[in-house]
Length: 301
Image 1 (cartoon, helix red, strand yellow):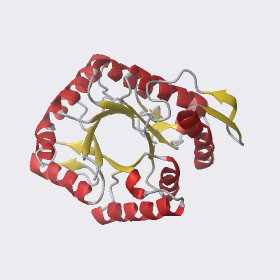
Image 2 (image 1 turned 120 degrees about the horizontal axis):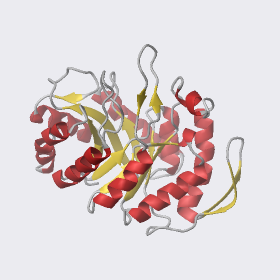
Image 3 (image 1 turned 60 degrees about the vertical axis):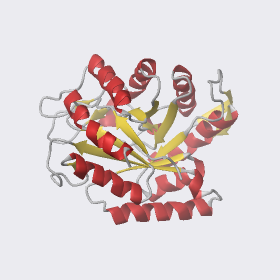
Image 4 (image 1 turned 30 degrees about the vertical axis):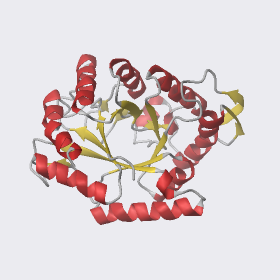
């Protein structure tokens, strides 16, 4: 049985009416504190610019830069991308980014990767693709996985190409950087079954524990279909946690007392997930400190 792990997803997206986002020094301080509290992994999300009709845009710091900074100021925790968007980046350069972050962290990097989402206006504003999201992702993996595992890729697709491409230099774990593939739907599950070391989903407003348990049953079946041992792949679930709000105040979020939040995490563990990644709201040091007894409670099990 895999050791149960807790992840801390750093707050790098503007939030609230005032569009507040932690400064660089605040992010570094939270990363250091998350490691001290005993979080196993410290993650940075990958967002560009959220545009919702009727609201001012919400920006974010660059997630790759944040992960590199966290690698430099931590020593024990693994670090990771939760999750990088394949829609917004060249796949060969994504593989090089992963190898570089693993080198900078001394072999502590988890490469979280997803298909991405062309949120209305976001991709358009940057001049990025807005269509064929999963077709692009499937092709990207035909380049990324060989580069990570074998150090070379040669592929000509509709959207992406790698022509006798060599992964150089190699980091401290050539061929062994863990690949985490994120996605809640069947397409993401199937790609994770084919390629991932860890499958990752996220808690939605409508999801019940039974829904999340059934998702893993479906995932096991997909693993069998592609000839992989389901037990060889980790299972991660991400969730917002609001320690200053009463339990049940926001569907799909973890909130309430220490016992109530820890109880929800244990429900996810019993459903079959061996990792839970927490994004605290508000994104302040005070909110992170409020999770200290939650981490302690889970560690005492």
